[in-house]
Image (cartoon, rainbow, N blue to C red; front, side):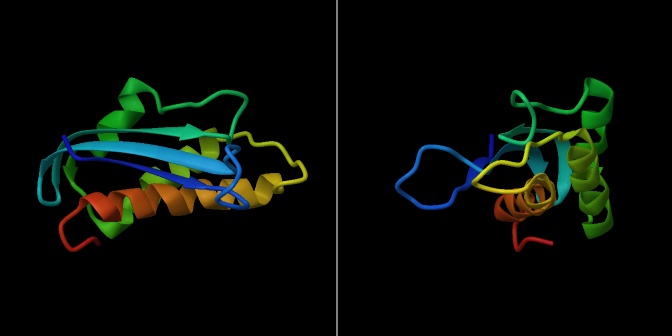
Length: 110
């Protein structure tokens, strides 16, 4: 099953992520049978969408659909502001990294 893990941190020397995303997609090409993503460092504990919301990964994955999915993950995030990054920056990274992860797994991206 195709999968990718992306993380953003201040420096490569630190083990503390500002945001991380792990994405698994099952399907062929842009036709997705099943998908799930786990987001870390953007809430008190890593999170995924509900089973009902994750069904939105199924079907043809288009740029518009990926925008909607990334917005869902952003809505579910509740990051903190600390010395490494603001909550707003972390939220923006959640959406960006969901899109980057999907594009890394799709042939020729979106």
